Image (cartoon, rainbow, N blue to C red; front, side):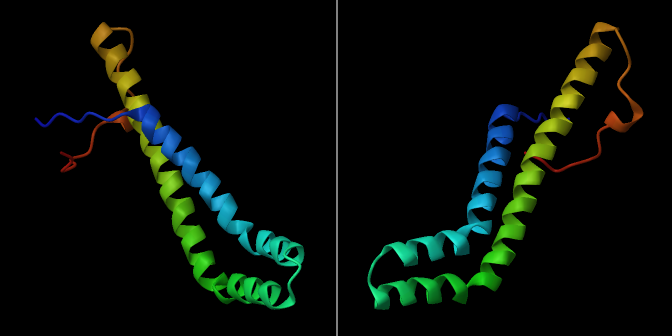
Length: 109
């Protein structure tokens, strides 16, 4: 039997940090427009606006992927935390692990 060891707190923090990155990506165009207005140079302002708007579609794809990664990290941390609690309770004889806590075969190393 392989042993899996995870830093659940690090996974949780990673999920939270990825969510913060997602928010920044979602607000990037609005932030760029604010910067464009503040620079005080018409040419630089136009370049900032063009740049921000030219990669809206790509940024939307990246935002979606970042959100999925953040949710995955948080979900993995939660699932393994629940398993840990359920198995500890089972070992202590306080309650058996729920049926959904039955581990699936995974090739984790």
